[in-house]
Length: 308
Length: 275
Image 1 (cartoon, rainbow over the protein chains, first blue to last red):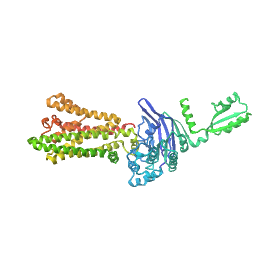
Image 2: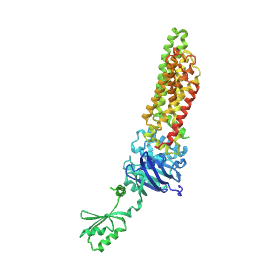
Image 3: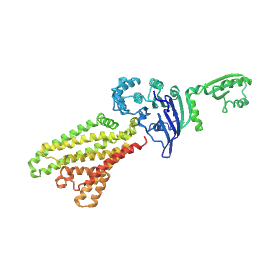
Image 4: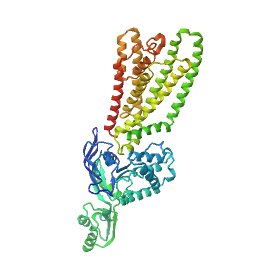
């Protein structure tokens, strides 16, 4: 089991500029050991640059980053870090087994460790019968699977998965989800960079919303049920005064299609709103709460910031 | 350890991409053609040439080695030009560099893999040409190992330049740069030789400056002067392959320095760049 005294990822005011262009403005975040962490943001939010800085591929202009308690350049630390890159382009003239063997050797794994790990991982990603197949004839999905096996070779304590399901069919996505859950069970921290919000919602413990390399907000996925929900209200005698009165629950309450639309900050506001309406003698015809999907949250948080 | 793994991978890559086999088969074909041609020319020479025997043999040998020299420069560039930049462009390198390795070890490994291939190829081709001439006509070069060593050094200089360029330039830009520099050295070398014959110091200086920019041609000239010390300095003996202005020992040291400096530059440049 990994030591749990230091976080899996810790960054403090990480900053990167390319010439005059700011790619990452100020990235400060902590990912705990064994946590599955979703990193969300629009295109050009600096997600890839952030991942590259954490992996030592790109040097930060300023700020500090530590993985597993060690500075990012530390080689010993990298023995316990796995990475599936977004582009998953590998030496396509290698056979799947040779490819994993090469990366196992680069991890410093012994011959017997590689002999044990390679068949196990090929089985895990469903490529057992492809051990002798050249990567050059692999489909996109197969490449992504073998890339995932590569990222897990050395039983890492921390794995970076950059869009790990972009080339996969629904079955493959399910497989990746199962693997992530298995990693969580083994105490491995997973840093998941993905555009597929439903997937993030299903697999992550915590998510961060980033824009221009600034974490706008982080949230526990488990708390999503309890916080922020929308409610649609229809009463017998709507009036402009009621719209004003409802402002105490949500300042941005809206009147549309004969209904009041409110966004409540917390689930506990729901019974409060219902009893206020009844207490003020409003006849209640409709009272429909809906949870915000991650996608709506995403649009709300990213949109709020851009003023859209 | 990383360096050896990558060196092995580099050699395996040329083999899997059929570059190695093509180079070996075509190299064999070249030797076959040279051997057949040499056999028939020498048969005629035996009848007519008389005491000019040695001079003709020297000329033919230099012609063969000159082609080998050219092939080695070409292959050094063509095989290694994508080695670093190609893997950066395809992002293949990212999965390697996030392993517990140092970046310079990866570049050094690639360089080393090509060095092994280069030495093997020089021994095969240059050795083959020399062996054909020796077996058919009993004519042997002098200073065999020193001369071959300089041909290797020439290959290494070109290789180090290409690898260094690949750490910062795109594959295409790197290829253009390397071939243009080779062109500069090539034409500079000719200007220098003709200048030396005409005793035109400016022309010789132009050649020396071009050798400082790219010492490949100069190293070849020195190698041929070593192979045929009594013949190579006279254009009436070996025609265009003559070495009228022989590079100095200082120039040779510069060739070694150039190679090492570019290799170190490659290791450093790749270690500090963003990917």
